[in-house]
Every structure is written in C-alpha cells, then in structure tokens.
Length: 237
Ligand code: ADE
Image (cartoon, rainbow, N blue to C red):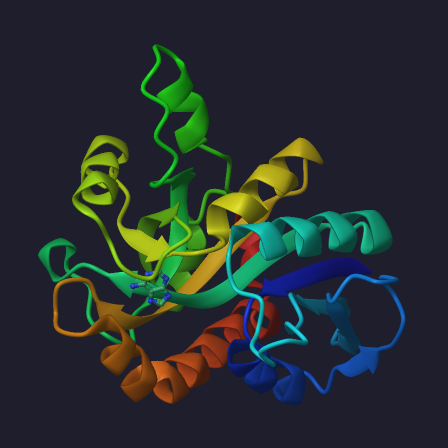
C-alpha cells in the first residue's frame, strides 16, 4: 500500500483534510514534541497527516521553518512515507498571474528567500534549491497552476526578500515549504507542495487578506488534495 504523508502547518489548513479523509488522531507518537499525527486509509492508500502542533504559551499553531523541519524529520523517521505532500496556504503575485483561491503545485525546485549570507558560494547554499517531484502531468490533469515555492520566516516581504525572489524566480511565498523540502531531500523522500493562495503580495494588507480568504482557500486546498489522492494523480509523475 502506498503511504502518503501530508505535512501541514496550521490546524485551519489540516482540519478540512482530517475530516474529509476521516483521519484518526494518533496519540503519543512523538514524545515531548508538539507535532501531532492523524492516520487513515483511503482506497488503497495509507494517509498520514502530520501537523506542527501548538505553542502552549499562546495557544497558536507553530508556523514557520523550525516547526516544519521538526515535523518532517519526525514524520519521515516514524512513518517512512513513500511521498510527502506539503499542503498549505501561500501568498501569490498578481504580476505572475496569481489570483486568490488558486491552487499551485511546486515546480522545478524550492528555495528560501530570507537567508542572506553574502560570501561567495554561501548565498546559493542558503537559498537551497531543493528537489520536488515533476508536477507537469498532475497540474495538467488537475487544472492546477505551477510555481516555484519560496519560503521565509515572515508573513511580510522586505526589499531584500524581493531581490532574492528575483534571483531565484520564486513565485509562491510561504513559511514552510523549503524547510520541508530540505529534510525530504536529505532522506530522499519525494515531495510535492500543494498551496492555496490566500493573499496577493502588494495587494493590500496581508493579514486582512489572509483572514478574509483562509476559509475559502483551505476548502479549495482540501478539494485539490482529495482529487490528487482520489484520482491517483501522483501516479502520473
Ligand atoms: N501564507 C499565506 N500567505 C502568505 C504570505 N503572503 N507570506 C508567507 N506565508 C503566507
């Protein structure tokens, strides 16, 4: 049986998937780590969903690269999945054709945009250029867009971030994909990112756009992920 592991940052992104696939919470899997796992079987596939967990001080989801690195490492070592799908939300760019509610698949490679080490050779290492699976056939079959995912630790975008995105070609801005891609590449686990656009960078207040669109975007994210599993679109890669 194929084992697909979804790695998700926020419960708001995870809940529609947990409900739709009827996944069951797996208690006590990761010791002291806040990471939580859910599991189920759909058709002939084992579905694992790993979510970063919550900060006990603030009660908020652990978003960002550090939590994503921990989740991915634990998910791979505990479950040994055949493939990881990083399902989440992202900011898009109207100048690159993005619209709120679009579903993008990772494309070509995945990079960081906020690791600046201006010493010859080190910027390239900081940016990462991590592997993801070829999503051309999945995008065509599912009617999804494709874009180069670029990650950083902030919701906003500085001029320096924008310059790195110009250099790398980054098109879809999130806070986890590159961290997940780094760990997946270390362990040689194939990775696909599926990202629903909640906001357009430069299209007004990002927090306001995010709050307004999160419910719609996570519902579309769930629909896209369900289609990828239900229609066996990963077999096209
Ligand atoms: N997640 C959703 N929108 C985002 C943005 N604009 N930047 C980073 N992560 C995001």
